[in-house]
Amino acid sequence: MKLLLDTNMLLFAAAGQLPDGVGPLLDDKDNDLFFSPVSLWEVVIKSMLGRADFVVDPTALYQGLLSAGYRELAVTSRHTLQVAVLPPIHNDPFDRLLVAQAIAEDLTLLTADQSLSAYPGSIMVFPRRAR
Image (tube, rainbow, N blue to C red; front, side):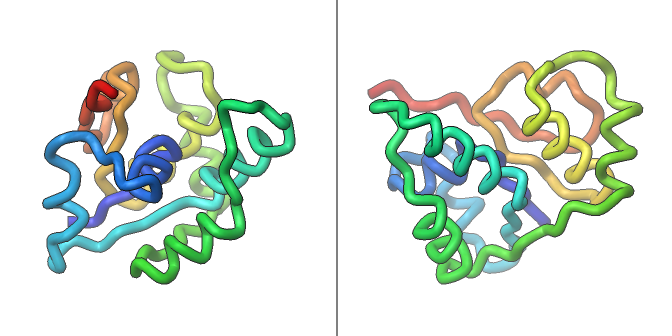
């Protein structure tokens, strides 16, 4: 299976706080793991806002993803055009582009965001575990 992790799922993975059921998917050597520069862009923006509750080094996250064997999925015009045909379910532009990439590339999107499951395509929702 080809898996694209959304931004939150990437952050959960980096922090070792994956929701139940995700770990086996990421550990399965038959699965190809992808991340999008869209997620890194979102992390950069949130980091630049200087929020005390969001302390993530985007460069360290990027290097960690590559070291862990994730493959970068470049954003293409085909992906951005796919956003235009998505139903108006979710307003977050980062999430909409991740959904569009997953649809266009026939990837399964892994997310903790239940609202994304209303989109077409293969989307697996794993609720975040309680702290």
